[in-house]
Length: 369
Image (cartoon, rainbow, N blue to C red; front, side, top):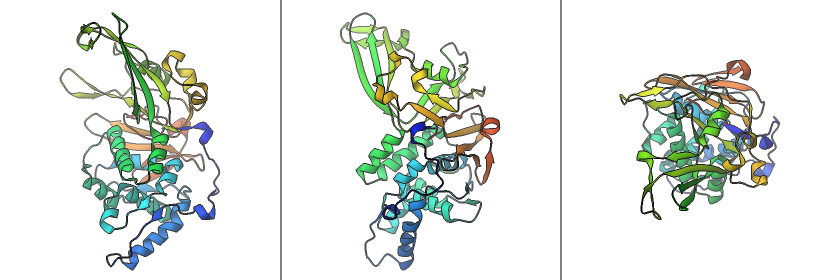
């Protein structure tokens, strides 16, 4: 996952004005159901979330049973100060039942436990139970890219303030223009779409390995000729013809997530993992990677396309079983940490952060499996 380099904040000192210490609206109805204990907890949140961005130390998350993927994604979310500044301004649900099933609120409670706890790790039990109410399976192997999309959609759906939903979109969503053109006539179709990650292939059409992350990006935006079974129906020709399909980059978010597609299907219908190493840079400037024909943006937009590596979600093992951990650079002390469930340790980016990005991962410049 990458953070736009011009937006990084490196100061360890809080920059929160007293009036902004708690922007989350606590709309608690004064009814008989609510106990004094709940009220006291909400008051406690008021004093904590204003400083939620400032981690005194990195805290791990206990594995609840095959929850390493969830734990890794949560750490990437909660170590992103741009995300936590959105999270702490949510409207807190009024009833106990609503709070139990509200993903943003439960994520906020987990953040508070991680901020205030004196233990080396905390358990994301309440959040996991909340996710199960929304049909997120527990105690199973997850794909990081799919789980990231599920979490993001739940966050967006349950954030009631339109301005927060917009900020969440601005923080993570990518805009692409797809262009398909008939090669027999002048018929063409252009459409724009948004996505959370750029799903980058690590092999080319001839199954040759792409050597660098920049190669993967260039190949993703390289025009593809649709022939044979992939031909499209041309309204002007009145039949299926060869089309040229291309994609252009329109807009990039503040946190760019790249998804390396390391799982492929073999003829036997079995899933196979591509485990070859793929180096990726500490800094990435999309203006130097993509050509003019691969972009549909003005100079002011392109000026923001410079990123610094923020996090890597790494998968070890095979396609059928394995383990996730996250390597994240703190945006407050600029040090790298390895989050391996309940175990957290400081690492050197050059010697410990893996060169094999994970297959599925969220908020970070690099996402690999």
